[in-house]
Length: 252
Ligand code: G
Ligand code: G
Ligand code: MN
Ligand code: NA
Image 1 (cartoon, rainbow, N blue to C red):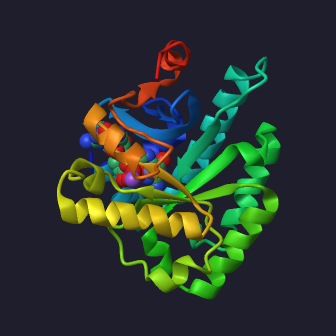
Image 2 (cartoon, protein in one colour):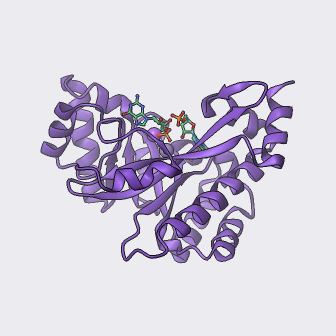
Image 3 (cartoon, rainbow, N blue to C red):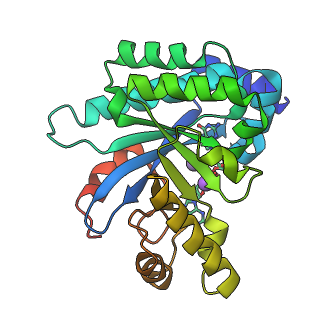
């Protein structure tokens, strides 16, 4: 059984695919959760999204898979927070291949309507590779997202080929600093890069989230540089949906 065949089955059966959720925090509370795909196939066993997302992209399965992610996460979150005053935002990864599709934005909006999910509570994470595509078209889509209330995060920031000149014109809300910078933050060159990214984000009025924060030392370093939002094993690994309530009581 090959991965492609198995993935096609998994999407159809809706049994072996699940989502885990990793909190994004400030210095007091959880502000959001990133949804991350997990796949434990009955015959192939556990497969990492790093293995199967590229196959899904190549085959076109990323379209139904991506829609499944948004629908499943929005439904689960609405249920979890139906009696709460405060709801952290939900962030989902959208691959460039998926975002390039003509009807991507209208499809997203349709899923939000069907699940009755507030667009202001949804963020989508795109990588810098979107900037290597038809930029005019990408900007148009980003503007449509903004108009609908959906937020846009630029994921793994600093590792791709984004031309800094695009950053000024792209309607993106937040930069997620790639974990590789955070993990090497005691290296003076890496620290200089992180400091510069944070300053640039401030001048462009964009938010910043540091990814991959594993140690208290890294957290303190980032706070000193002016970073206010964090994600990483230090606070929590991605957890199954059922474990979210345990996190809500945990100290930051
Ligand atoms: O969760 P983990 O670190 O194993 O994720 C590995 C990679 O897979 C990350 O780059 C992550 O962004 C990506 N990924 C996880 N879930 C999804 C998803 O639902 N859609 C897309 N497009 N990528 C995902
Ligand atoms: O590309 P993206 O940023 O979406 O990928 C997120 C991936 O990073 C997830 O698979 C998640 O499991 C992983 N991750 C999250 N926090 C940490 C961390 O603190 N350290 C490491 N090594 N990986 C992390
Ligand atoms: Mn991400
Ligand atoms: Na990332």
